[in-house]
Image (cartoon, rainbow, N blue to C red; front, side):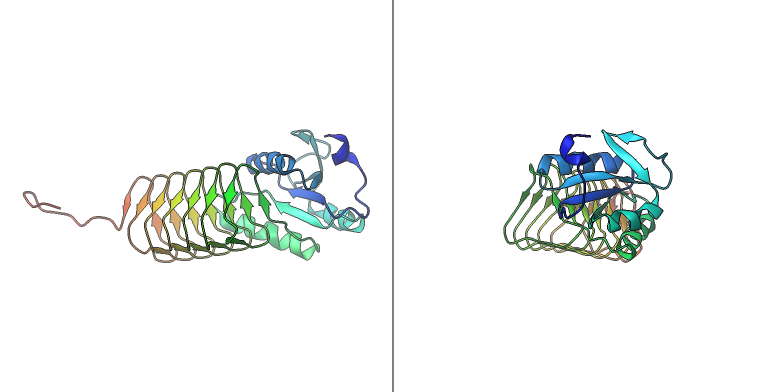
Length: 232
């Protein structure tokens, strides 16, 4: 923890607490330090011992520490629970943060490129080497991971997670709570319904219904069986 991170939070509008101490937390800590506009205070995690250090940042305790931090002047919190495979965990963290009175800032890694016409809602996290094109809208709490391409006119809902290397063509609509796997590709003007999950390396060529799971490495829709001797 550096000197700036150890100073008092009283009256400091840049003071930020990180909720979650897992792998995604490390990515977020590095992002915040690279961006340089916010001051890290510490980590909240119900399952880690107080005083444990993660990348030099101390674990302050569990969710019961949030009211004390708020009273000390901390007003910003970041949800560092990725929730891959179980989006409800990430939703619960946002609810806990909100009930304690904290706001979630939008975080963009300095190496990402976000066009000026893009709208990023509160709590969005844009990680390293990502490109977000013109007139894209991204909803509250979504994670746009490293090396992602989101093409022009895409609309993403609340708490969407695009894993590293995912690629969205223009005009794609991703509804709330969708998870898109690593290196998955979604074609032009496709709609992916709420809570659908797209596996790693999948190719999506048609609309995906809400709650549908597209398996890793497959093409959606699943090609129809062709009898022997007939061309697909």
